Image (cartoon, rainbow, N blue to C red):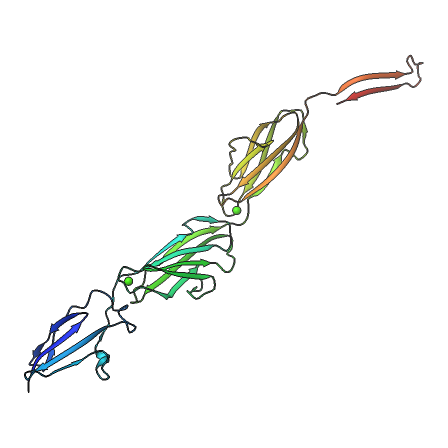
Length: 307
Ligand SMILES: [Ca+2]
Ligand SMILES: [Ca+2]
C-alpha cells in the first residue's frame, strides 16, 4: 500500500511533509521556534511528533518517547542573546576603607532566554584564580531573569588599586561581555607632622603660625582643617603636602587641633596646647638691706615680682 500523508508537529504547529522521489523520503524545511528549548522540559528540547497515514486510512505516530526513534525526535533550539552583568558596588574609582570589600553584582538573561548558568560564574580579583558560585564568601539569590550576587573578599586586599572582573554564560552557552570595576583600598590614615607650634609653646604674640607636612600613600591629595578652641579656622591651602596658616590666639591656654583627611575619608589628628601671655610681670616691692650701706660692704636687694 502507499503512504498518503506524513505530518510533523512541533511546539503546537503541524506541518505537512512532501515526498521526494529522488531520496524516497518525506521532507520539509521548517523554521525553528523562536524561543529556546532550554526551559521546555528537563531534557531541554522540543518534542517532535511524526504522524503517517496510508491510503487505506491506517495511521501511525512516533514521538520523543519512542524507544528506537525517540532520540531523533527531540529538537534542541538555542537562543543567541548574551546575558548582562552589572556591577553595582563598588563603583569605579571608589576609595574603600576596608581591605575585605563586598562586591555586589547582578546577572541577567533576556526575557524568554535560556537563563543564567550560575555554575559558569567566574569572579577574579586582579586576574587571579576564579572565584565560583560555590566559593566561600559568594552568595547568589535567584530573581526574575537571573541572580543578585554578593561576594565578600575572603582575604585582605593590599593597599592601593584593585580590579574585579566577572564572567558568566547563559544556559545556551552565550557568554556575557566581561564586566569589571577598579577601586582603591585605603585603610591607612594620612601621615601628619606639625612643625609649628611646638606643644606647650608660650608666646606673647597673638598671631601664631600653624604649619606642617601631610600626605597619604593611596588617597592624596588630603584636606587639612585647623580648629582653634573648637572653632574651625577656615580654608587651609595644602601644596604638595605642606601647609601653613596664621591663627589668632586668645589670652591664656589655647587648644589647636589639626586634622588631615584623605580622599577615602581616613584622617589623622594632632593636638597642640599653646599659651598666649601678653601681661608683663609686675614688680610690686623692692627692699635694699641695709640701706644706707657702708662703702665696700655687702647689701642685699630683694624684689617681689608676679606674673
Ligand atoms: Ca541569553
Ligand atoms: Ca589613606
